[in-house]
Amino acid sequence: MKNYIICILLVLSLVLSSLLYKHHIIGNDFLEINPPVEEKFEKKPKLFLYVVFSRNNCRDCLEIIEVLNSLSSDQFFVKGFIPDNELAEVEKIRAITGAIFPIEGVGKLKGRMSRYTPSIYGASKKGDLFFIMPGVPGEKEYLKNLLISFYQKIYPFLLTL
Image (tube, rainbow, N blue to C red; front, side, top):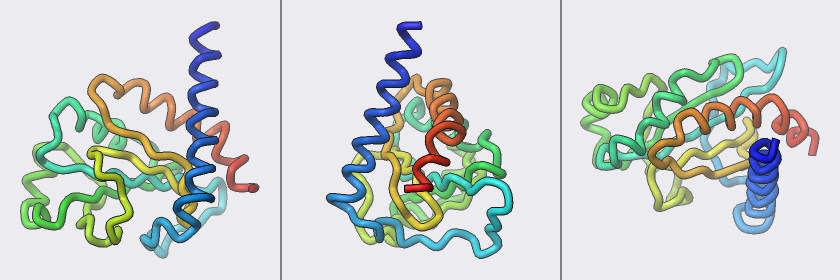
């Protein structure tokens, strides 16, 4: 029970700090990445996850990619960004990391992403940023539970704001 309370408090602090960061530092034009045109939100809107990583990240840190690959495409849209100088080796990076989602160059982000990689950014279709999460070793199970809980319990509320 104590662990659940701590987990809930951590999630709430993450959400609140992300909201403050979004509205006071970044503004609503943070992510100017156009999601696929074919997106239709007949049921629930998707949570857009953008992962910034490099082939030089530690292998244990990149285990977050396995989690992102396993997420339901009905609930999540995942896109990866790598340094522009690594774009020529995107297939090699896919083989190393196992990434099955689209990968583009980080130059499209206009220098607005964190310098820490790997990092995951959770956003709405409009580009409203909800959270930034670093990829660290050993967070695979935690990350999957957090993303699913966030999508089911908090994301619908945030869309009404």
